[in-house]
Image (cartoon, rainbow, N blue to C red; front, side, top):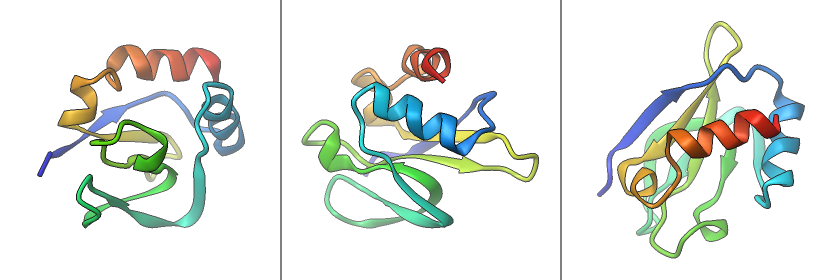
Length: 100
């Protein structure tokens, strides 16, 4: 099971983040109360997010990627070690931020 890592962002606008992800070709799921992320084996993980890219829209061995809003209104990206290793890393967050 790949461990999730939280990454800081400067993103604060839900709609702008969702639009940026769509522009990059993803189909984000929005859940204001937050939903659990799903691992590559279909297991529900403890990590929760308000904006989720489900694993079926990523690589076949991927875990969900989430964006969770903190108490200051800033989104943190929640990405597994595996997914960071296949390109959903700091550079990817940079592309999301630039598109945002």
